[in-house]
Length: 146
Image (cartoon, rainbow, N blue to C red; front, side):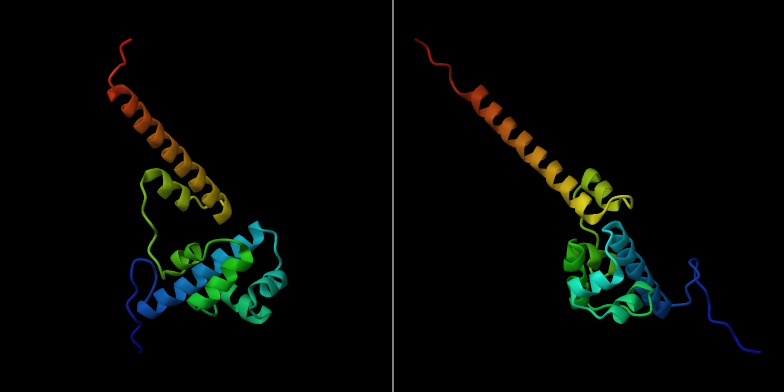
């Protein structure tokens, strides 16, 4: 009788399985982004400068790509390399408050849509901050008497 390895709450049997899960997760994420962008596997392969079989293996979770390959794939998909690094577990998800976090966490949006929303949100915040500063300066200026 053979002893089976212990299984954690997620069904993984240890650190090696967690690494394998990351490979599958990043592959599924790349496939989702490619499908959203309406790019074929062959087209992305050419855009990213990665062989078609290797890219297919990445998407199926057979291979875990290096940071350099992720960067090439990100360029091909026209998304940020940071987004792929976060999905691959190379980087932690950036923080920035509830609104940016919610935008980044939304699985229904493409990376490009998320970036546009974040840019618009930040531009509104900068404008409001500038308006508040100008208003404070106006209120503190002494009135000129004629």
